[in-house]
Image (cartoon, rainbow, N blue to C red; front, side, top):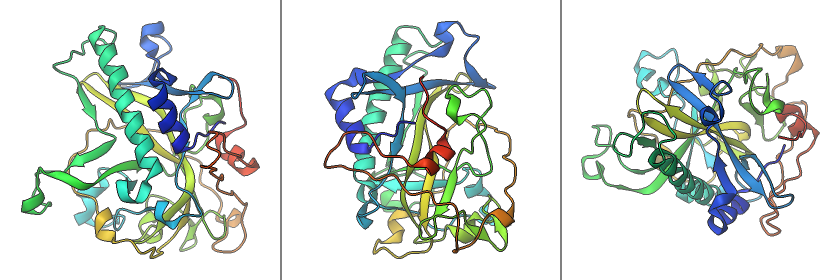
Length: 332
């Protein structure tokens, strides 16, 4: 699998906007479109300058050697057994990144979002998205730049431009990609894999594998995400809500649990407000045996792919364990 680094993504899109594309599958015959209810899914690709081919947009995040580029958890993950956490739980699990902490990744997502909106607006103007018009279409922002007007936000900040714009990357634990996924190496593979940064092993919490039920005990305030891969391969079109969204999912992340990296964690606290991303239901992945995993001892290494921002080639060296997670390279 090809994984692009953020600097390459930003520079490539800004230099040649046509290097990023969204292919509307229902325009190409209809029967091949992937859908769930009123939501249809369409591939996002980026041109690889190395061979001139368009490839699914997987992007690395953060430089493991630079603590200032490591993402932090957005405050405390909600406990699913706490009835007061229902408001936060309905958004699902996510990693929050912002302009201060993400740097190159933030700038790359900004470039992706701008280009995505240009592409989809042109499709709507050309009448290529059924029932959508310039007047009724709504974009789900990848980066939130304005504070909510809800009571959870301080009065003096409601509706104001955020000092530190932020975005969210979904965590899809215990879920697998469809066996009909358009990207062949992802079929039946886990949507999200989290590894402990120190041991490179899958975390074990109270004797059980990491799951939605116990992730709040692992991803605590101050936890950092060091190196990993973000899946930005899918555009979602919600024909019921007239919404257009560019989905971001964590494919792989290495975690430093509960580390204080010198950031003010108040900058990373999420706001409780409505999000309009389409809900996608996926089958549960087979449970992993606790015997096959260890906690802070030995495990199957999954070294984060190094990012050579100086060379800025766009190509990351992905070891065999990354290939185990994302699948062997194929021709698309």
